[in-house]
Length: 103
Image (cartoon, rainbow, N blue to C red; front, side, top):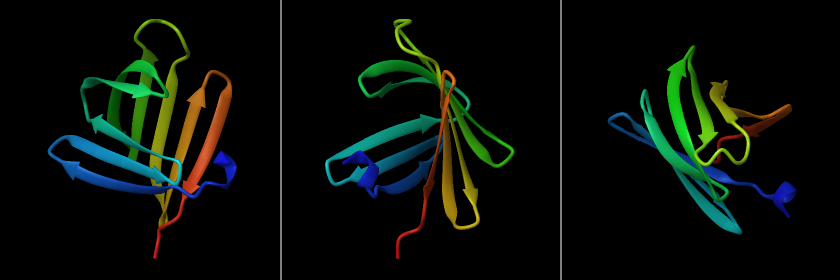
């Protein structure tokens, strides 16, 4: 089911916080990204200490498990032409996902 999902991602920016809302037919996820400061966020039930920054026109987030369980995650989001390209690293696994604009 997940591989056939076509999520819609919406962004809003207010002050130093980026709100990213991912909407899929079977669930919605809201991520509040605070730039240039540490904050906590839950990723699939794991509480993480996160730090996000703009670097070379990319939004980069590093997330470390609070309780020491799980693996460090890194997200890189960038605009390439009209698309959003999200690259995620967890351990030795790399995932690249491309989001296209909706009409």
